Length: 198
Image 1: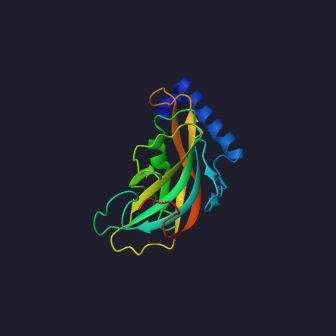
Image 2: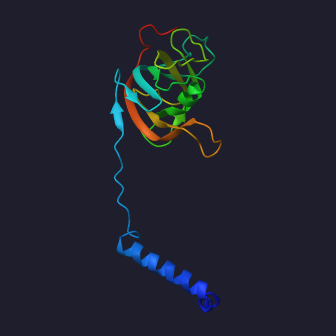
Image 3: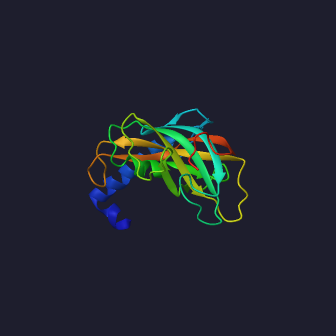
């Protein structure tokens, strides 16, 4: 510090830093910021919740010993959320991968999210989804319930917000980035939906 003070440029730099700190302090820059947390939109059955990339309308939820459209695979229980998904982007290539990461189950109603174990079309149990822009697709999101867990009578799911970036810092290409919590939906967990695959 003494060495910097002896040099003319050092004195100017130290005085500049001191003046900048004083201005920031006078303007309240070192005070605690009061950030108002936006409340998340909460919807229920047949109420759409949306991000910039997707519109999700949950229709029903149930537990089962088999995945819809699959054979029984042992003593396992599954939690299934059926929803109508609309891809709001003009692209379809990577949208299933984004959807798989954006719809999450919140076992305690908040806290640590759990991604679905499987996402499939509700009408034919096809695992590979094609989410054409603007086309509604009925989707089953499936989670394996932990062994010994009592099946819930009500469950909470979350949707991450996603926004389009014209040019990303990492690759310089356009992409959709996850942008924090976007909303929640709470549904009763009952018997299989009408028209569910056996």
